Amino acid sequence: MNYQETAKGILSQVGGTGNITFMTNCATRLRLNFKDESKVDLEAVKKVPGVVGAVKKGGQYQIIIGTDVGHVLSEIQKCGTIAGGELGQEKKENLANRLMSIIAGIFAPIIPALTAGGMVKVVLTLLTFFSVVSKESQTYYIVNFIADSAFYFLPVLVAVSTAAKLKCNMYLAGVIGAVLLHPNFISLTGAGEAVHFIGLPVTLISYGSSVIPSILAIALMSVVEPLADKISPKPIKFLSKPLITLLVVAPVTLIVLGPLGYTIGTGIAAGADYLNQNVSWLVPTLMGAFMPLLVLTGMHWSFTPIIVQSYATYGCEAVMGPGSFVSNICQGAASLAVAIKTKNKELRQVATSAGVTALLGVTEPAMFGVTLKLKRPLYAVMIGGACGGLYAGINGVVRYTSGTPGLASFAIFIGENPMNVVHAFISVGIGAAITFALTWFLGFEDEGAAPAKAKNSGSLVQKVKIASPADGELIELSQVKDETFASGVLGKGAAVIPANGRVVSPANGKVTSVFPTKHAIGIVDENGAELLIHIGVDTVKLEGKYFTAHVKDGDLVKTGDLLVEFDQKAVEAEGYDTAVAVLVTNSQEFLDVIPAARGAVKAGQDLMTIV
Image (cartoon, rainbow, N blue to C red; front, side, top):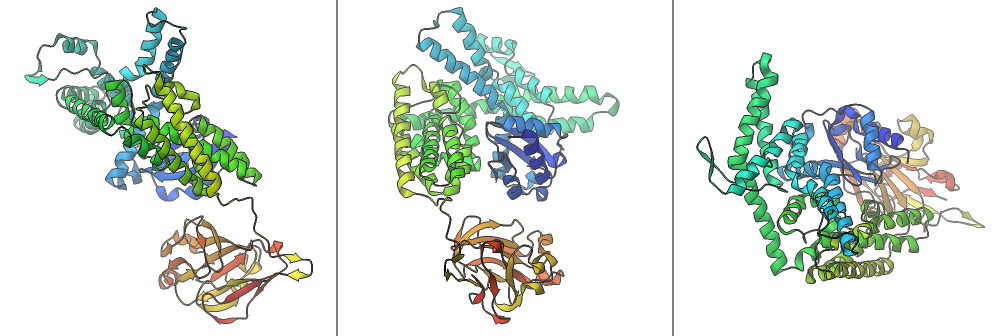
């Protein structure tokens, strides 16, 4: 992959660095927010070399790159400074999407730190498991506190990351997070005596590994800091602004927000523990089944506070780890089944690479490049994931430390119970076997099975009828008031001056593209003709105004199925011609394209004949 070209290609489709208000990355994807979302062409982003897929979920744009995402992020940063400042369009998101965006923005940047700590724990677990290092040795002691550091100082990391998301001073936020862990405060907690601040009681709590207190503290800081800036005299603002912020936020955090966040956190942990104790099979089953949808929508980030709190309270978690382990392996199994069965060399290459990557724990290439695209393999993943998750839940499988579940990191399931990792492997074996079998027998639309072309075959000539997409008057393509269409440079065809704003499919086939502005639809008919249905001349300038699409990419349609509705009078009032052109863009693959006779025509009647 050429990281520089990928970065420049992405920027060209999102309005440049000046349109980016927030940018970070997780293991496989860029996560961005934009000042002006109208400048973002998500479909064009998907076509940039090096981009696996792109979605907008949870109030945030996610561009899936794969494990090279860090290199692409670095190249984007070299291209200019992001706009920052206000979050622009993000503020218009509903509350749920806004909350999801904040959670994702807080935890995505600190995942590498948690992963590092978790994987050091994994290494230490393996060393002790194979008796290379003794738990009583100083080496174990030192490596153990190195691994624990990322979790113990989590309040500081979360405070800094929250400040970056909420546009506060990150360094001042880090100080507020550190207040919760200061040795003097810990000494007060250990002493067990009542503590007061200006007469108000300070609840003595150990905040190590906590998450929510820091988030609440910096949320308060995001309000206090601007007010401090506003009331501070300009000559001494550089002194008074941080002074006011710290003296307000830190005490309020110790007295109110810290205890509140701690209560919420322990409540969340207790809820997760209740489920584990009473219906241990339920959560892993649901996670195994719906993990692809959670990842697709970004909802998996909403479980991060629960998982981190579970680690802090119980030393393990069963909310996401067991189910996601099964789901990840199932994604790999489905992709490899596709790779073995497909006749398309390109799909085989993509599916093989994505399948191996998914087995190692990174599923986005498999999901966006294979299973989601082919649909039925995704159903197989969900069924297999549910079955494997059910086994994991029944047998009480837990994840002992942070890390992306996969074969490369199976040791995160090694702990005090030696059978835990055994049951984890059995669960993924069950899920993978069921997924592979279902993918194989359910099948999928193999892109390698090219449809028969309507070409001259010896002495026989096959004729393919293409229907009118609208009621109106049939005219020759040369009469369309657009030189590009009229010249036939894009392909032969015909056009209709519509009588109303309904445009239907002119053939049986598959929708290959719905333009973002909804004024054009691409369809490959069952005989291999590649059709472009284009509504109006220069109507792309309306940017989708007055147009409503009733199909999406990948839909199968039949002749007469409604594709698009548009307000014809409104479009014409804006000064645009509304002629509906139907082009055979691969005309060169056929003998000829012959339009029907000019005159009145109804939707579904013959428009042209391909021979």
